[in-house]
Length: 399
Image (cartoon, rainbow, N blue to C red; front, side, top):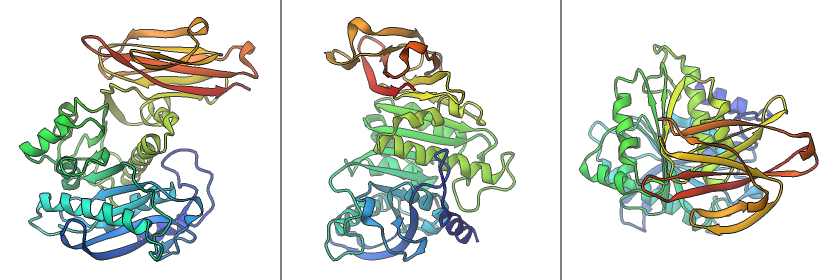
């Protein structure tokens, strides 16, 4: 059984090398049923995955490193939370409490009701995290924004959820199905972060349908599309497709990498993980991707040989971008945001108009004179018609 195998693997000590590898926490899960006292949605069912002191169903929660960020998950048509145990337990192993909605599992689902149920489950889970006598006490961060992941129908329902829940600021659509004009308008107006993963041989939700979501999300501050070559429709489930050109295990691995990496990068601020999602660490994967990021993510990570930094950013396609370094940090307000490099001391090492994929992958050779210092790296992505945005400033100690 897939779940049993995953739990056995999760119980082993691991030294994670990539976002698809098991995280530092053991992961448990519990099914929940409650009457919604916040929005009056009636009976809500779901499955909660969480960092635990042991692996498995009903395992004691581990609040020692908590509270943890809360994330939502929405299953696809005819699916249920148990269809995605492996992916959600993986997220829990990386320090997330995942609330997976267990309603609208029948032949004729109401996606508007589904979105409202997810909203109720997220609020209830956060409320339980603040209740002294709850089994989730101390486990859930309070008052922050929420990322929500959805597959197929659940991916399309993200477009309805963001219309009713302003705290959902990161959405990850896995082979996201089409919805309606209301959902389209919500995504077009969404200013958060939107990520879309498609399969090149998905006949249920074709890649073009997923790409249409990417095209609509032009107001999002970060908007990225991946098409995994040879992948079908169910690569994120516990039974990934066996008849697709890309083996099912590889399909699931890539979902673990992208979903866990995106949540860690966006919610936990581990932005160097973008190297593994769209940069040098992803270059060998069977994928094509496009970025449309008005707020560019930046990565600066020593390359495997240790002779250079793998740096890069994801910005807007066909627009100018630059990368610069300095040994002297600063905090200078500019029209593009806060410049983290000392203006007299910075050196621009990349400046070009980005190609259609909207990314720049640039090695920065390490000079011997930098040894023992901290190197500061920052990027800038310009916008059409004027304006632009500075990235964060990465600080890299040089041995």
